Each structure stands twice: as C-alpha cells, then as structure tokens.
Length: 582
Image (tube, rainbow, N blue to C red):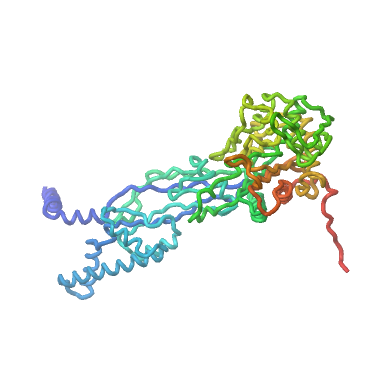
C-alpha cells in the first residue's frame, strides 16, 4: 500500500505540478516513422556493362524555424557550459550576450555551409527570411556522402540529412538518347528510364526511429518494411558498337556541317537493336542549360521520307506478285510522263534490266513497276513491312510514320511512293524493313531487350526472290554503282542509297536534303543491318552514297569485327606486309 501511494504521488507530481520536465523530455526525443529509399534497378548492355546505376547519396534539408533562431536547447547547453567554466551562475546580461554570440556563430556556420555545398551566397539566408513558417525545405539534393559529412561537422541545429540514391550514367553522351534520365525524385523522365519506370523503380520500405528535438535521427528502433529494389534491365545494345556508331556519326555530322544525324544497327537474324545513336547528343549527368529538343531520340521518334532506299522493296513486290519478269528490260529514256507530272532520272539510262535499275537507282523504271501493281497490293506490301505502324521496340514515343491509304492514291502518288516520297518512316522502321532482304524474305520484329529468337518473325516475300534482289543490291557497292564508299574490305555488302529533298511548308526545299544509306553484310549470309541518315549536309556533298555510305562502311567494319563474323570475300582483304625493310 505504501509503494502504491508513493507511485500515485509521483505520477501526480510529474503530470500536474512538474509538467515542464516531461514536456522537455518529450521534445528532445520522440519516436517517428521514416521512409527507407529503395534501390533503382540498373540498366545494362547485353554484356553486362552498366549504362545507368544508382549510388547512395545524401540530401540536405533545413527547418527554417529552428535554423534562423537559437533554440532553448542550444541556449541551455551553452549557458551550462559557460557557467561550469566560470564556476558560477550567469547573470541576465551574460545570458543575453551569450545568445547574441550564438546567433552570430550560427550565421557564420550557415555561410560556411553554403560554401561547402557550392550554393550562392545568401541562398539559405533568404529561405530563413520566409514568413510562411515552413518547418522543412530541401537546400540541396543528392550530394556525395563526403560533402554531407563536412556539413554535419558544423553541428548546425535545424539542418537535417536524408539518405537517397543518385542516378549515374557511365556512358554519358554515347547512350544518352537511348537510356534517358531520371528527375530529382529518381523517376524516369526520358528514354528507357521512363519507358520501363515500373520495372526499374523499387518499392520504398519504412522503419521506426527515435529523433531528438532537432529532428535528427539518434537511434533506429525497428524495421517495419524492408525496401524492395527495382529490377535490372538488360538491353540488346552492345556498348562497343554503340560507341563506334556514336563516334563515326558525330564525325560525319561535323565534317558535313549537318543539322543532325541518326544511325541504327540491327541484328539481321533476330531483330535485336545493337546500337541506336543520334546527333547532336547531351550528357545526362550534367543537364544544365540544355535545350529539351536535344533529348529527342531521332532514331526512334523522328521520321523522314526514305527516298530510293525503298526501291528494293518495289522490285521485290513486283517480282513476288508476278508483275515483272526476272529478265525483263525497261526502257527509261530519262523521264516518264505520269498524268500532268513528269518523273525524271538523273541521267538517261536507256534500256535497263532489274539489276541496273537498282544499281543506277532509276526513278523511271521503278515507277513503271509501281504503275503495273494494283494500289491495294502495293500498299499491302509497304504495310506488311511496317510503314505507317510503330516499330514496337518498346521505346516511349516511337514514331509510326505515315502511309497514305491506297484508296486515296492516284498514279503519280503510286509513282512517287516507288522511290520513297509520299511516305515517312523512322530510321528504326527502315532498318526493320530491311530484315526481309537480309533474312530471305522474313520480316523480324525489333527489340531493345536482349533475346535469343524473334517470336514474331513472319514471311513477307519468297526466299528465292529476296535472294535475287539482295544480289542485285550488291552491284550498288561496285565502282560504277551509287555507293562505292560503302564497301567493307573482306566482306560482300548489299545496300541502297537515298538522297531525298526535304519538304517544307510550301513544297520541297531546294538544296536541303536527307542523305540516307541502308545496307547489310555479309551479303552471302547477312548478320548485320545498318541505316544511316544525315540531315541537311551543307559542306558541298549531299548524295547518300557520298555522305552516309562512308559512315556505314566504318561502322559495319567495326561491328563485324566486334561480333567476330568471318569474311565472305577474302580476295578484297588488305594484304599485310611482313619482313624486314631495307
């Protein structure tokens, strides 16, 4: 009974007569629940090379109400230390002077913190002048733990720290358009970071902690929910080929004083995207003062009229449909009257067989073929090849391009479609269409994710005719063809040039071109498809065979070496001289 009376008396004393003690103890420590950030999944290339990784960092925040003044705890601790040093109690004047000194020291420390964090002088001070009575404001996000430790060393009450993750992109500009980037809250904003946000982002956890009066965590109590890390994303991209393509495209855009450029490398057997680059590029690690237009992945989202690169499909469609004979001769005369319009060739090529039609890139001959085919059949071939439909690689904002419904075609539209006008496609769509030429009439779907086989492959043309047209395309790379610069030592190459006038508001623009080349190698058993498009070259040359074909040659040569693909034309390999020189 005596013990019970004592306990009740003590409880009454604390809760009624001495409440200040309990309030003070509650202020200096309390239990709180905090979010535990989850690790965002990595983005890796096909060989495991990291393209996007997350690293633990610190974010610094302030409580303006605490930071701009001197708290009771700060004043009490300073008074106690000074009284102990003087061995006597402080007077009111001394307490006032001490408070003023503490305030000056805090102002100096705030300035030091701004310097350490690389902030503009006075930035934090301006936040402290805010009269909205905010108790939380970030002053810097995602800094290195080393810098955060320097700030912690200032021991400023009212300054707190949160553990977060920062996204780093080791490949920088090389894969920027493809990988994209995240925002300040680690949410994907562009590229594959945005497209695969649900897969990459983790599920945050939570834990119960004890905070002191300055909201600093002083002890972990228990884990409530463990964070679940995001899943890794393994791409089909080979970073070695990506770098090679980026370097050569950048050199070509600069050398030709072009507006922009894009290049796509496909695996001809399963539709994997081995590389996709655009120029100009940007560094996703430091995006200050960069125009948003630079974020656009031109290979996936920009379209252009593909020009003569589609002529092999016209020949193939005409052969497969029985509208031309394999040995047929076409009389071109250099021009063709189609209604009120005239289709012209660069030169009068006279009489031509199918091989020379592609070798010399005759608009007149392919127009004659197109006019023989019913519009529905012609449209169906283009539609099956993927024109007018998004390529479906899984990239956000992929272009569909445009293909006019066949009911709206007249004869001149049919003719212009045969040499790549009156339709639009992206570089990826064009590269995908070329899989029918590379894989003996089989069209492949395209994928940015690593895979062994294409589950959606479908036959569009007969293998016999596809092989015939591919053999014709090899003549394009010969000395008297339109793309001799596309040759690759040691390998047979098949391809097609395209030099396309750019459309403007009032029609086509003079001296403004897309320079295009699409090709594949080794032609005996194609493994790689490459499409190169240079936008508005202005250094003198503008033909696809002179501007884009050399880029194709260099990237194809490097890609074949990287993939360890054996030569199929050893007679054209350079001879290495050995032995002692005189």
